Image (cartoon, rainbow over all chains, first blue to last red; front, top):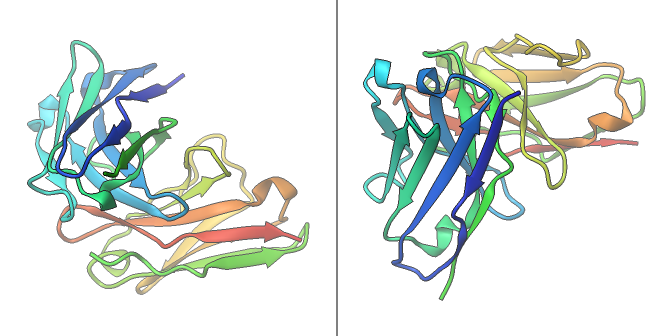
Length: 122
Length: 110
């Protein structure tokens, strides 16, 4: 059974930094493409970014609102995905979900974690 | 990238069929057969219901079906059940190698 457990959320001041982690199990992590998707309180979903597998160059893509501020990385030896968030803004306040794309080169999010809440406020 | 447009709410009685629309542009929905749909119950994580416009993952009821015409994709739920009451979001791959979600639709079972 696929399990994704996010951690690292919390309260941070505008301009601050935070690193989220996603511990994965139940599948071959090194083969999967991984994404972060966020959901603002009471609002809709927003894709944040994706990292491909090392086989596919571990390349990353980001949504325009976070490009240059957020960085995705992965440690396949620890089956863990990371999201480094810098220069945080109040509009980054959201629940952040870790998701899988188990079949490379497909374009959907087949498993989701339970999410971790990030609150950016002074 | 603007969010895909969905109706805010759709309702139906048990046993009825409902359809949720998802309208984008030729740079996303209309340009690729890469539309997916997600169901989200309150306080829960989203769940994949349809991928690549009309394919169902293993374990998803065949009461859920998807289609696309031009820049608009649709999710149909037939034989509506109480457990189908949830929020539904569409998503599409886009021409700039990223993803855009819909605005979300609240489905109410009357």
